[in-house]
Length: 309
Image (cartoon, rainbow, N blue to C red; front, side, top):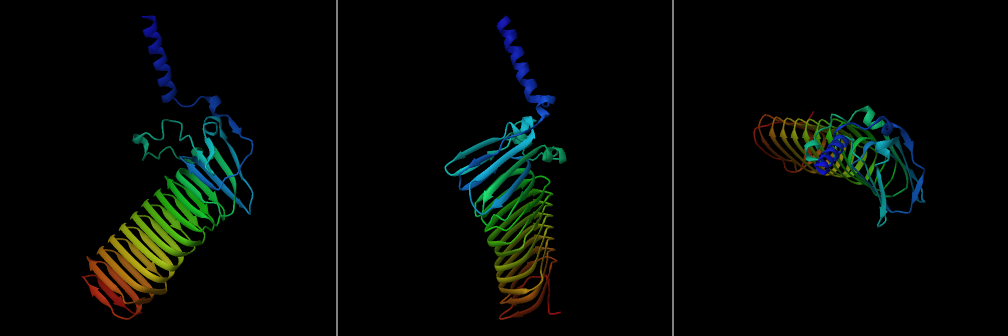
């Protein structure tokens, strides 16, 4: 009987540790000493807090972590195979891998963002991968490839990179500098992505999110499902636009060579440059405005097409 009672008490104690919030002592602020790593790439997973990545010309990667004890102390750091891996501890109120909390972002507020800071200094050109960040990020001009996946509300700023793959689920904002190669964006929700000059752009918008870039120098591919919008100051190269719903695309100028537009619904496309051999396919009450075109124009469907002006 005593063994059974002991097992019950032990089980209750374990359940209490999982259910109840961290003790006051666990909320004490701690700061880890600086650590250096001779690595070639950086990967950050499951971090709930603030990520800061500064850039230098060369040398080892430097890492500092500070925050509340329970969160900073449970942040995993491992260097293997030339890669530095940092894994966060989630929000401390359960297992972050629990499927029941995958889309629960109500706990991500200012306190969660401000109770953990992960600060790195990396050499220029280092590839950076951020998966499952819930919080804010400030990443300098790495000039290397970037993969950036973020959930919930955010206000993140990223400098110039060689290529970028950005996924934003939620209502946050991500601003990126110039991208010398390819930019791929995916938004789900009402998030907002901004970027500078880019070579190739592939943008997918689901919901009411928005993407705005300066200039697509090589190629532009846009897919919108919902009421999202895409804007650009200019394009130079093949341009492919697909809208399902009431989304909008506005490109101020440049040359789309060739231009293909497909609209199903009440979508709206406005192009203030020159479209080469434009191919327009539409179904619904959408509208297309082209300032000018050359070559052969092919249009089918019942959307409102205007040329000139």
